[in-house]
Length: 486
Image (tube, rainbow, N blue to C red; front, side, top):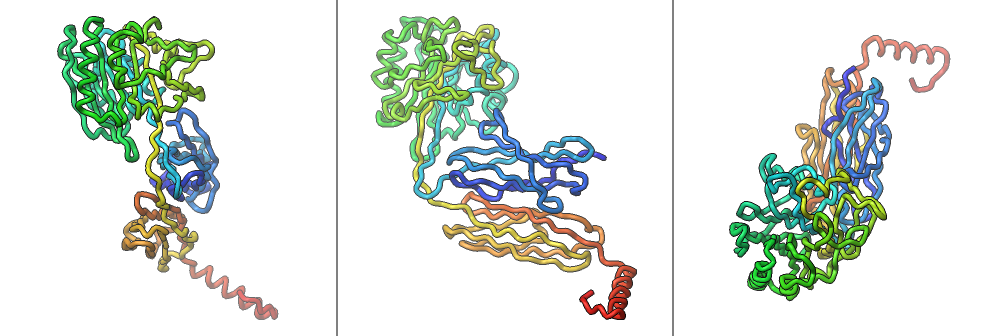
């Protein structure tokens, strides 16, 4: 027997609020006698850790599993697969949802900002070691230096290191600066740099659309290796920042400052706008970021408005109040290798810097919207050739416009309406439809959903011989004085 994948129908009972559990509906494309078990895996950290639930067989092709509730803002990803009676495990569909806030709560978005000059090899380009560090630390916004890639396009680098949904801007020059962001970049540009050694390397900036009412300005910099140049570069940078952004805004300047120490003149100038009071360090309390861990070359400097939002950066359960200098080689007092990072990545050939991260919290405005309520129809049985019809009802307590849809769209009619919708599913199955069928109904209102799966069992039309036998049995009972209903 061939091993089949799950059919294109996995659904979540509701877009959940804070702490609300979710029922996952998985529809198998094989009859129950061919399925040994159905598993639903779920994760909140990009599959770094996974929990698995064995789904219960509801009826026919439909299986259900319960995923526990999580806090507001959590992104929950799920995957369904099943073990066939032939012993083969088949991967199925994946899906995800974001837990939203209940009325009166604020959604907190944590933004991880990273300064990264993590190129390696002979071409000042990103390779496996630096890419794995990005994948392990999962930054939301990166001020990236030497933004080059020899193995493909810059878009391919961003897709591999961060994800296909990330945005980026990239400056000019042979060793360009840039900004990579989980959220949309509203505006971007570059400012002139005075580095005599790399006169074509400019400073890049971007305005990032952080969820909620507050945006963040990001300045990605790579200062000169010539100590005589850095004070002038710092003066230029502060002038650019003051001209472009208000002092009350959330601004971060991050990157490779090539600073020999934290007291040199360039740092003193930058600190007229930005703060260096929270100094990140590794798990051994070393705050230096050079390859030999002797100089503080790399920084994430926040304006006063942004620094007020700083929260501990947590990696693999370890919290760093001032932020983290990440070195995969550090093993005392403990190692910290978030997958897929390898212990030697920070020591790769020609990698001269460590990554630096700080986390910031951005509360959004309070919300009061709720998910629509979909009343799950009962599972149905129908004899081939007989008409089947039933109503599907959805309501939204906020009075939003509701769209009611069905995976079997040709047999379903439901005009959109505000507040409440009633749809009608109608089907007359033929002889070739005998067996189990499953349809998924989904109600959507203001971006939130409720869904359910319904199994329809089509029974064969009773044969003439079966009907004659039933009549004969009924007549026999009557002759014996048994007047129970046949």
